[in-house]
Image (tube, rainbow, N blue to C red; front, side):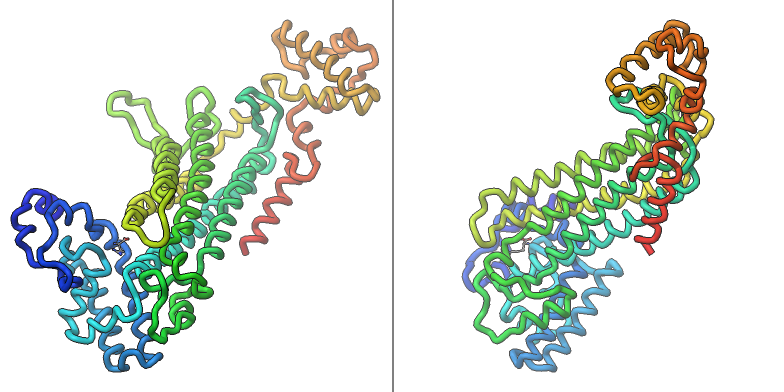
Length: 476
Ligand code: ARG
């Protein structure tokens, strides 16, 4: 920050600065300070230091294996890069804005550490394939982190589902009480969503795992490089097959952001439910103190701040997705400097997603369902009206449309009497339809209702337990 501000204000000094050491041959004067400020990415791309050094070490080893540089030089480069990495890791590295980005910062320091052989590292490579490689490696790590973050969240949900496979709660449509469901069923709905999110990250990982390294500036290189060797050293499945595409592809970052946006949207929906459920009006769950805050003025308050922040994170993650899509739109092949604007938003989105996943996992592990409130709410609002209609169909062979009508009359009657369906007498029922028997009361309780919904994927505790077992098996 400080060095950027200095660069902005101290124009004269920058104008007098010597031309850049990396391409000084073509330039008589150094850049204007404002040019330096807009051009430099070191302020953020230093986050890719480890990936940059990993890529360079693979490249150097390959150059030596192909006889393009000597083994001695390659060894010096590879060792020197480790020294540079340890300086960066320990915070003993002076990042320079004048050196623009992480690639040139590392290479310049390597030169100071090992001298002449450092200048041979960039043979048969360009910053264009270098940055694409570094960024891909960085995004790949985030895909892995998202996958394991989701796995932890799914495990926490499975524990909740297992514990509450037969706790009854209201199921909603339009946020109006619809039919009773089980707590386990509701938790498992999120397991399915987060499971799909996980598979989106896994798919993206497979598709993106091709190495850009060796595409050089855009056209490949005349040096006899071995792109398969560097690809496999870096854990890629193969080298990217077209050098123009390799340096200008940012789909992998967009796929990450797309999958992250959907995942953040799912987190947001769940967070919203937790906010509502933890309110005094619902009292469906108690969130732990670890994930709540108090109010500075209202002593009684316990606020679901973590849930609210998770609910909000989708804004910046989706924003990053739209932002990068907009940066990439209309760019001609191959590399353009516009593409330097790819990183900050991805970094921010990744940080936000990992934090939201971790916070949600913590909240879900800690939260306590209030089974009494859940059951009381499930029993109100004529939630078993559909069970009554279904019973009329089954027991009296009534067409469903007629059964719907009869049930509607019974609901109106209960509403007028200020009671619930199971509280109506048999005589009340028979005044609406004479053939109703007292067998009907067997389907009106919420426990009977959920137990009866045994269709595949239904809310019955027996079905929920099957789905929990299937997921536990899948995660083994
Ligand atoms: N810092 C640059 C970026 O992030 C590295 C690539 C620079 N390439 C170039 N041709 N100027 O995109």
